[in-house]
Length: 439
Image 1 (cartoon, rainbow, N blue to C red):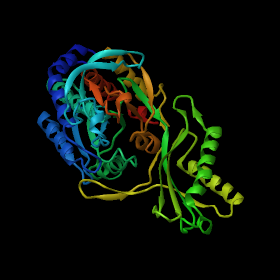
Image 2 (image 1 turned 30 degrees about the vertical axis):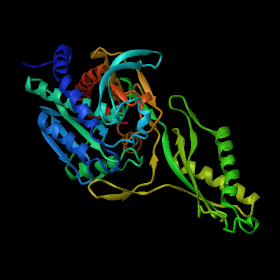
Image 3 (image 1 turned 135 degrees about the vertical axis):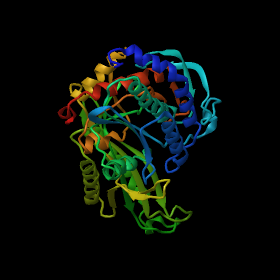
Image 4 (image 1 turned 180 degrees about the vertical axis):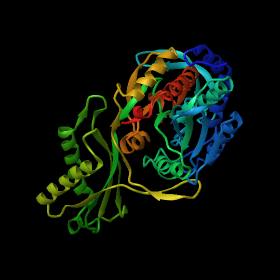
């Protein structure tokens, strides 16, 4: 018997069958702490589940990324379904409204609706990374399982479904994804044609986000005794005029994209050295989180700050400062180390691109409304669309509103819809000809 994707009832029956097991898998993921650089245990859980479900290939690379592949019955494109393994710190447990951030408790609570226009009651799983991204990762893994079941039932499926769970996404350098794309896949003779990310989208198709660069500014002074500050140059005092000038410049000169919004800058870290009593500080270190839109680059953002430094230096002979793109060594749980500049490129994909149109067609077939959105935060898709120029979208059950907060949770009804939507998206994307994946 050949199962047609148009016969959505066949897939829906499998979804109903696997939902309880998928929910328990998501809970198991949430119950496993996996801070950046400490993802081994959750990687083991992902691999064990994919092996148990019958994936054709399951392996781990030397950076700690995990990969699972479901082969189609006919040649076709390889579609990567991507999650990340790490999560941010849960913070102060007392802010979690009585829930254990690693408890994965299930109950019914008030939740934002899909468009954040009102509240509604829904069953949820609570816990750190429920919304970023373990709820979505569970759905993607079980979408691969549904494809396996369809294949067993006689469905002729094109291409390859490839789940990837990457390390070290939260620090923002995209190290896990970069090493997966640049080293692991080529070493195994694997290419990919497009990507579906499970970063939070509220069951909408997300089509881009602003870029990000982390800028490190060092303002230099001269130490002196705190009783005689006139004998030194206080680096913190010098920093105040610089900070004000940066804020004023960006407020007057921001760029804007119709879909992605305005560029922005946020001072996120500031400290001084020596940082001791009775000593005027000779260094003030400032870190900026600079978000930018298409048309801007990390280099142009760097140049803006350099121009401000040069301008102040002309006015004040004692002002000395440098700016650079931050880059710090990151160590994976396998012991591998790399230093990568902290840059994400801005990107977006057009609604009329064939990749997006196929995904939208699949969402419609699954009985869900087709809606679009763009992330406020950044994702590893900057590597895919921004650098590699391959098509990508976001689609998942999680809601951006709950990410990185002590109200972290994911709706189980959205998870049921997402595993269905993911499966349909793959089946539509796998029909596309090679030329449809050009960006």
